[in-house]
Every structure is written in C-alpha cells, then in structure tokens.
Image (cartoon, rainbow, N blue to C red; front, side):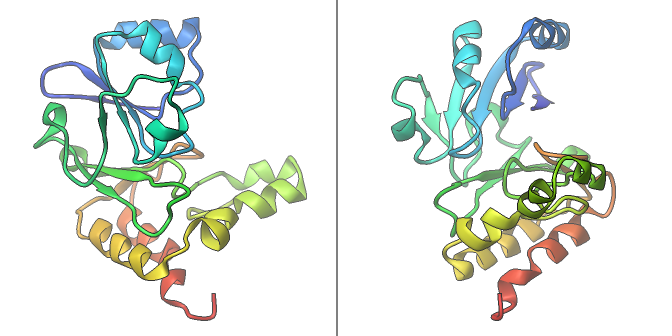
Length: 203
C-alpha cells in the first residue's frame, strides 16, 4: 500500500493491504484517511475492512471493479482526470489495452514518483529461492510487467503503446510498486525499457 498526504493534510491510500491492528495503528499515527483507491480490477481483496473502518473516506474504483464487487460501496470511478480531492497534486492515466487489469497509474509531481500496482513488478532476485515456477511466472530479479501481463493481460498492443507514451511524458524518476522494491532513481528509463517489448512485433 502507498500512502500519499494530500494538501488538506488527509491521506490517500492506494491499493490497501490486509487490515490488522498494526496497520490501523500506523495509519492513526499518520493522520485522517480522506480517500481510498482500488487502482485496478484485482487489488480489492482487503478493501471491505477499510470501507467499514473509515466510513468518512471516499472510495474510488478502477473501471469495472464496481460491477465485479457489488457488495462494496464506491463513491466514484477512476479515469484519466484527477478527482477534486487531489486535483493539482496527482496526475493519473487509465492504462489502455489491458481490460483484465484496467489499472489507473498515478504520478506525484512533487516527488517525481510514479505509483503502480500490477502493471509492473520489481521483486528481488532473492525470491528465486521460493521455486522455479514462481521465478518464471513473476519474472523476479528485474523491473517490468510479469508473464501474465505481457502474454495475457495486454490484448491491444497499439492502445498499450499509446498509454506507455502518455506515461513517459510525465517527469518521474522514482517508481513505487505494490509488488517488490521501490526504484529510487532512473525509473523513467527503466519504465521505457520494460515496455519496449510492445514495439517488437516478434513478441
């Protein structure tokens, strides 16, 4: 989970993790929760506990998630335009061509940070000890989209290429991922390299 402090002092929670007493305590120390974001159609498993625990927070869903989870309350659907709560503080883009994900990518200009969920992983190579199958499926040891995103998730490569171009127009250097280590420097170049396969007709 990524926590972003908004201009009014409240927090935006991106891709909530399992909610337990330790997480609750940490969040209470940080401040009031203003917005909770489920950035794609997959990162919703722990959302219900946050909706219940923070009834005053506004809940935002990626396109298609409200239909997938009719049991949850959502206040608005995410898209390319920032919500009023963070307009002028965050930029966002709905990544095209991968309907199974429908991930909304965020950019925090003040810290030059790109925020991702499942679009790309950065799992350290030490994870190879878990199993060869794990390494194959999640492409551990480097930053980029994993096997399922490359081969099954992205269905419209032209649309995905246009989204990559759009994201690369942002001036980011750091990348925060939901899976793996933060890329502290050189993120713009690493993102471009990770998605260069979209222009390779052999793949």
